[in-house]
Image (cartoon, rainbow over all chains, first blue to last red):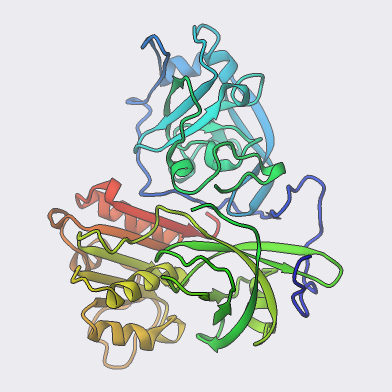
Length: 197
Length: 240
């Protein structure tokens, strides 16, 4: 039984079935990062997938742009309790990037410029669930929001959508990434509130 | 550090801090203690069961069940107006935590520490400064605190005492400086930041907390000046 906070609730927000439990809606786009924002020139940008056989497949920015680009309209949910509805992105599906990748591993670690990592099961990356996104709201993705490109895994809490992403390495077990080693849940489903350890 | 369930918390003290902010001291039986810099989730429940949850940095640290928050009112907010205008001693909320293991200062780290706060971003950094004064260590600490004016500063009197206690405090006023202030008034600049902080070669650990635009500008400046990005830890609030 929750404690009642006397006199609370007069300025309440409308509840919305699209809002996961414990979240509130914001029109802003808050920024959360563990450190300074890296500045990455698309001329230097490379994205690599590394398999268990240590095989590397890499894409330059131009090569990424030559792949099929998808429009993604989605709600996003941050573990710090804000959600934002109807965000619009453009990016390349992970299904496209993994089309020629030979791996038997079920888990992935996303890597970023600046050293950030986050672990995601392949089941959450494939099947139209995840993208390498480089446009937000019709414009190139701003550096503080992860530009030039970030992972977009919108059905999980947004820390899984690694900013400044530059690669994915396959892993046999679901080893924890950066925030997952610093108090946050290994998986991060907002609908079941997989927030913390 | 497994985060437990929601803990009932009772408001033990309410201290007006600025025209828009309050310090709240909560008594939280079962609180496991926290490291300086950690935050918590706070939940309010209305009589009809409606709930709202938000994250707040903790100004206190260490063992014990007294937990201090400082809350600034967010215009058009839902939770902060309640915490800054309505809540009274004896009222109930719930908290979950402590949360986060990265934006924390650990007293066994001998690196010089640089704290850089904008506005209410002082809260987790104050927790670190308080912990440093309390701990039996001589780790050098510097704080750069940017506020609109002295009246907008949280914990101004306590920060003056910390300065006497060996923590090097530099104030930056963006709108209005106190009478007799010798410095300039305005946003922090690469030059004013360089004057206030450790040199890149000092091996410092830097914690920056404040509104997004402030943290972005300060962190960019530090990296441009040669500071190791991996030794600059940031927390931001507000939209971009």
